[in-house]
Amino acid sequence: MFRIWTERAIPVAIQPMFKDVTPLGPGAATPEDPLSVLADAQGAIAGGITRYDAAFMDRAPCLRVIARTGIGIDNV
Image (cartoon, rainbow, N blue to C red):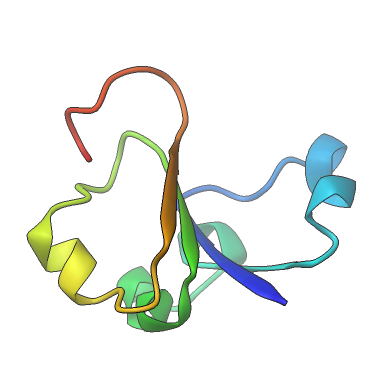
């Protein structure tokens, strides 16, 4: 199963598209430190809240892809 870290919950309308995905992070109701599960993530859905900088990448050794919602690359 592919593990995706996401800032927000996956909308109900598109959840069937994620049947082979395990969501991680705040969008998956992770405890106080949403980045604690980042090491297991193979992908990330980037919103506008979290900075996807070197410190973020250091905590995500398995990360292979980042998909950006919205527009811009200022946080990635």
